[in-house]
Figure 1 (cartoon, rainbow, N blue to C red):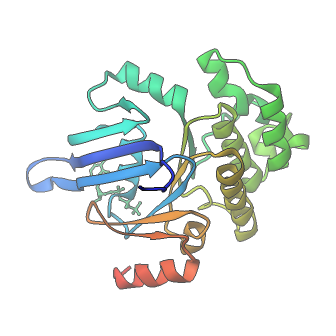
Figure 2 (spheres, rainbow, N blue to C red; figure 1 turned 135 degrees about the horizontal axis):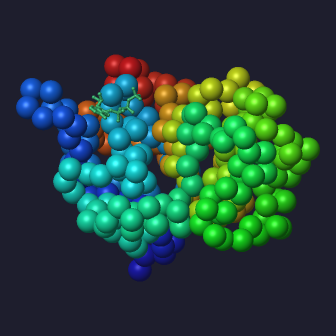
Figure 3 (cartoon, rainbow, N blue to C red; figure 1 turned 90 degrees about the horizontal axis):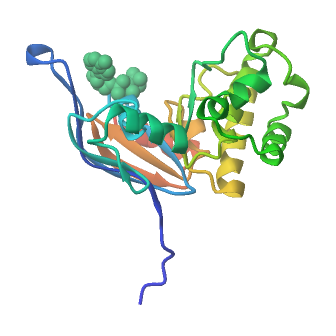
Length: 247
Ligand SMILES: Nc1ncnc2c1ncn2[C@@H]1O[C@H](COP(=O)(O)OP(=O)(O)OP(=O)(O)O)[C@@H](O)[C@H]1O
């Protein structure tokens, strides 16, 4: 009898295909891709430029539609849902951290952090809010405008905003890309803690083997397909694998 623990799937895709353009200009960005994202795991997506990383992230997250194939967020099949329903699933279940922090300049750090919940008409859990703020070291910055914060602090505000709603999934696209190495390491360390301590599920696109080394599992993409994966990655092993791929 199998004694392996049951893995809950937070998001998945079967036969995921994404074409951009048509005729001579047609590009197949995803080529019949299958993937399962395990709950409470930190998954990194790596691969050469143009291999389809951002397209995979966007289609998994319901920001963009597949041309063919199916995808699920938790139990909900998102392919085939109306735009309104997809927006609702994103709002209820997903947090985003992108390289451009997408903070609203006229709102304080606190207002930016609670904005998604305010828009959704949901209450902020004060205890959870305080916990996130303490861990991210933003306690004395909450009344500041984004322009009054350093790049690292702005990125931490964006992470707090993604976490505050306790989303089932966080999708991050090069979250440490604009940060100096110390702020980047801090941010990635925090994301790792969120996975280990709160069971957060995170999917992150990155070019950086060091960033990928914070994950539990690295998926390697080439030409719109997953060609390999690595568990418990180290930066050196990831770099070697990328070199083999001719990166
Ligand atoms: N909106 C679009 N219109 C046309 N082609 C696109 C569009 N978005 C992406 N592509 C193409 O799809 C392919 C995959 O792009 P994608 O951005 O997913 O790759 P990536 O691995 O994230 O690349 P990078 O590491 O350079 O960000 C590329 O060939 C790209 O040129």
